[in-house]
Picture (cartoon, rainbow, N blue to C red):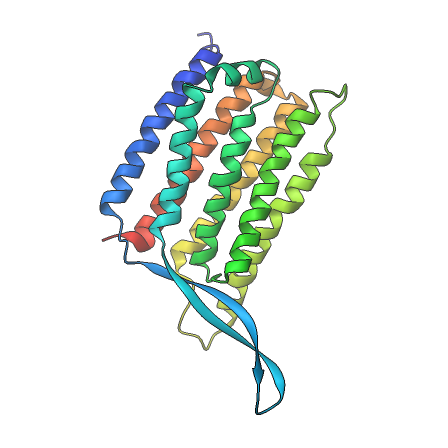
Length: 259
């Protein structure tokens, strides 16, 4: 039996399906998630100790962030992106796919994936506002490097990998930071506040999915097997996005947002 040909119109229908699927998730999560689960957002600063005549560090909580908010945020971002791509942006989407690029994908990822990393960071105990902003920005840079990679290679005869390499460097740093918090929690045997087991599974699964996105781009540019067709890689991106974001949302729900 011949394999069904991947077409741009077929991808449009897939995007419409994704919009509906994410819309359902947003509605269900909004209705059943426990909004009382909150994490402190802290800032650190220096104070002058009048007794010791020295500068001491201090930390204060400036906000209590409901965990469900970043979860809903990246689901909503995905939902809206798929709606826009399949409607008002479709003409540009179609034009870009024909030349082997998708600007909308990287813009969406730069916000949704960055929000995902913030949610994971909160679950591991990273509450410092500056640290969270930096993690968000690094993942955003990683995805924007994907955009630069596709735009840059429109004008080159041979694939240039510099944007890909820079993106990988930016993307691995947040995972190293999160891994350090895992290590600190595991090594502190006297502490009763351990990172829950479900967070370890989130770390492993979402880390693997993040790497699959990079592998997909690599295979696209190497034109290996079915990746010779750019549309095949585009469909893989959509599937990876669906699975990764759904997995994170409902793992977090099962672990801590259940009513």
